[in-house]
Length: 595
Image (tube, rainbow, N blue to C red; front, top):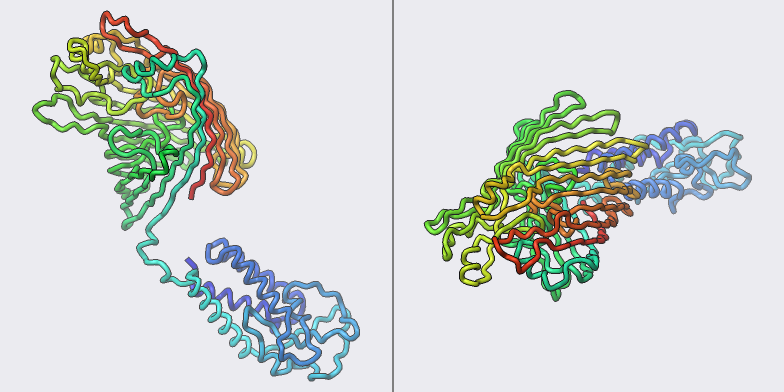
């Protein structure tokens, strides 16, 4: 925040720079001008002044110093002020030129009236002829110390008055508690074009896709859409060891909404978009290497790609993080969390348990060279009670709460109400996940400083679902399910690592291969194959910042199914195919800004 003493100092130096009263020669004046401009630039760098205001102050001082006051003696003009402003000395003034020795100085609206009232020592009286200066000689008038002090005081009062009016130099302009807040946010507008190859399953079986756990409603018709994503939040320090944070985000809220996307689809008859908290946390950090946080904490895990986590996923629960710095260039990090997925109330008619995620990750971050690094981490995402359990009798609802609350495409599912639907002829489908999920994940990133701000970045992720057990699935559900539990994703990028700088750019290409039950499809990528697992293909894109923190991102995803849509059919079912082809291409154009 700007402070009065800095403003006073600036006024003092500027007044001295504009009034050449204590310089004996041209070099002294030039040194004074250079010092003044250096001080102004230093105040800009420290945030005391904006660049625009600093340029305006310097220009105002120079212009004022170049003008003689209205009450100046006849024959006076602006030669000394021009010298103070850095005008070159062209030698002796030509015959008939104004006398440079009698020019008063001015800063802002304050003029040196006293200099005009009291002729400087050695200056010719008003109206007297002035002898031309010898070549190389610069006449500098003398201004008494009392006059200089008056100038300084006037400038100080003028600048402080302006600062208070504009609230940029007043320490009391903002309440003290606002100093503890850091505000941030971002806004994105997206155009998306979805395209489906002609050999996809026709429109008729889309109802079958929905019934068997594939969360799409279109597999053949081209579709163009517009989205927005708006987020705004703050982090606030409380004392020295406690931080609180909140963030509002667009997108769906409540039951059935997408946990991995803050997108809001435009085109709902101009109705207002929904907004909800996607972050609300309390963090305790008694040291620089330890943090304990609780609430809606965002995603504290290292995730170089979207293989396991979509970018907008915000986790809930309690997280402890250790990040000791072992050496000057090596940091070890460990993060562990207990994260509720679905709270199930224990009532007599319910036998299902609450769903939890226990997540552990540990790794290191090695810095080498000047701006290069290598990061490697291993994680276990241990989901508890995430799998479904069939209701034991035809009208039972004991395990209805074991159904998947949200799902995309890929995970193998089965009908929890199978007995009711097959024996009573109903279509009251309720789908649960066939497999348990204990996901092992290895993540890595190599960031090489290439030339200047240009980097080479190589990201990689690998997963394997250790919870898949064919015998256990068949015993619990009565179904035979293929073991498709592995996945990997890689991306290579060249360009600027971030889009914070104007004219920053980056181009990238990647490949993704993730089998149906490799990871939980609810939380993985929302864009590739329109979300979920059981897909493979490539993606590429480019980013360009046309302003600071504002950039365009163009991406193309080309994906198709690996095994086809796996339908966990009851024994003897022959009315639907066991696999349905599903290929999806997606073009996205984003304009995004952040602050």
